[in-house]
Length: 150
Image (cartoon, rainbow, N blue to C red; front, top):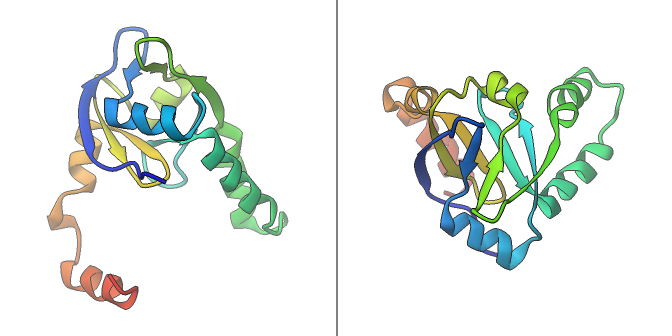
């Protein structure tokens, strides 16, 4: 199955809609139905947009977790509770709910980022800060990724 990859710079329109990049729309229309789920990220200040089938896989994994664990309860409260179904309109846009825009600090300039099985949506300034190489211990990251065989 094709993976979501790449990053795209856009702006939110006055109604809070974004255009899903054409390469992502192609993946969605060819491999998934048009239903998408938008949720808050667990720890990062961004939103995740899942095609319905990927969201269903994620939900199934969560169902298998022991519900009494504090981290599982946090995951359910932060991510599952924020899940909202959205659909692409005829122009390839989705409406980002106001509460989600507020939670992710989305203003006007945004970045849409492919993450293999989902799409991330970031405020441009937050994205630039998160991917700043000065924030990362490059050697430690390289060693950890090498341990995974990358």
